[in-house]
Length: 188
Image (cartoon, rainbow, N blue to C red; front, side, top):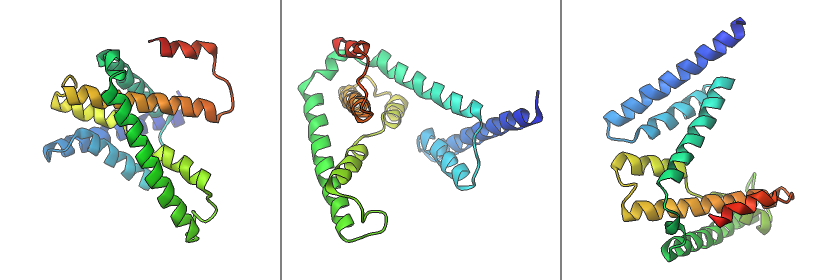
């Protein structure tokens, strides 16, 4: 095995170990371990540490497994409840309205990094900012044992609806027509 690959693999093991340590420390002060994991990532990024290929693959696997777990626990009947649809739409409309107006107002003040934004670009940024973190909410609900509670099911339903909107948006923004097989998702 090449020395460089060994160094990268050991580096990834070190970063994972640090994440577990920070997660443990966060747990000791009654915070979710996810806060420690995020703090580790921010710290390592600030220090200029570059992750190896193994860590990227593990991260993808972790997200995939988490979303798979959400899918196993999600009752699809929750997605069609009026509470889920209405809260999702109201949330996105209000956030996009407020954020796009604020971002556009900042651009009118010729603020650096914002001065070239038109209202359409501001609305696009606001749309991206309107999404919540499914991963974070699922982990917090799991730790509190509230995944199957009424508010837990509604929250997960809202987040899944946001994720579906994001997938549709990403597909539409590429300018490519998705495969007709993708339409089978709506038959669920």
